[in-house]
Length: 62
Image (tube, rainbow, N blue to C red; front, side, top):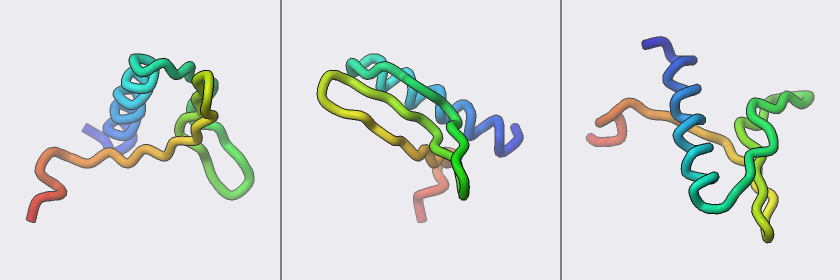
């Protein structure tokens, strides 16, 4: 699996999590000068700018 595909899958999982917890996804992969915001979401109280870092299983274990 390519790195970009792993990243997209990670973003999808995070979007599902946010939606299950009352957030509405406003934008994915929003490009701005100097970078990109992976997910912009909001609920009744917060506007969230989310950066997703997807790791392979076991990659954080020494």
